[in-house]
Length: 578
Image (cartoon, rainbow, N blue to C red):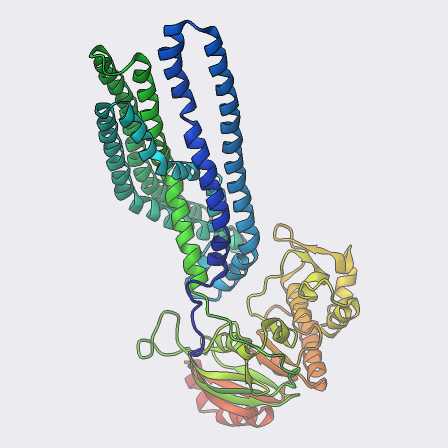
């Protein structure tokens, strides 16, 4: 992995999607300019009515002005609709462009330390929902505050200075709102993510939680987490609500102050009566975007944090190495000096999970990897299929490291049955065929027969069309494991890794597993079996013994087992029992 680089920050799917939205944002800014200019229609109409119509008593002038106002307000509504529609379509386009990449990264994040709490799809939903929101429109209106202040200043400098002072106060309030609430909102969102992860864990483990009498305590733990998260979020909301209420009341006070000052200036014959009302309305319009931003501050913070997490997620992905179309592998597996440290650990801080593991397998070989619990068998399985990368060392298939293959191309030649198996929502056929809609039904049935699950599937009401779902799984643990085995050997891959493949199997399942390994070996496949139960390695020809992450022994099965048998002298028995 040393030759992989992080994606350059200026070239990720998420950043590129935002870059392609620049034209839309410019268009929205232009529509916002039209909207904000047309917002002067009401105050200007009122100014003309007070200063021109009432003084002249001309009905024709009033009718002409009103006709102009009707046309201008029609354009105002049109431009406001168009900018909202543009933002809505931009949100849809953003989701369409990065949705698949985001889902892919979400799936892959489960392979990273701490990745189980990542919720990039939720973050994308937050960003998508924010774009056409009133808060986003308020941000586009904010740059027009100086324009409105300038208009008020043109009416009279004193009114302009009062309005500028009012905007300054509201701006300070907005900054204080940000400074005093951002930490609470950020912490509340982190706690919400942890709570969501705990809820998902609780539901997935209900089968153990309820019988063990843990349901009440788990609910109590969730209640504590939920209450703490709400308390932190409410503290931030209380402060934000206080700032929002002050800003709103101050805006009303400022408008009244402008009316009062305008009345004084009118008495001094410096402005007209219409200018009094016009200045008050325009100044109120200048403060409206700030009010909108303060009122929607929590959603703005949520969007900002979600946007930052998405950028960091995409930026942190290792750049894809260029690949070529390598020929189908024959099954020569070279594992050289593979070392893997515990997550978040560096060399020397903790003993490695795997330490300098090396071995070689030829096509047709099947090795049983045995050893006590925590000896590193599952970690080795994940590294052998590329789910995890070794910290030191290499895994080569036919001389090429796994990352030299195109992922989809290599996947066709790999079979993998993980220790913790969960089939996905879909039909049994879908799961065996690895959700390939172009998969041949004959290949699906062949894999099921090799795994010894074909007859069992036919006994189900819908056969291979039986739909699996989380809410109502129709299969037992052993049946699921055998279907997982069928998925692993679908297409007769040349490289198969089985992690505890018989942990839920009965005697007939063990026989089917052994026969499947024999069939794979006869076809020239290389098979690695991580095993606790001896029946899992019945059909292998080699054994690798792991102890504390190191290779204790490796060689022909009969030789290794005979050596182990000779070591079990009668004098050792009491020691082992003690």
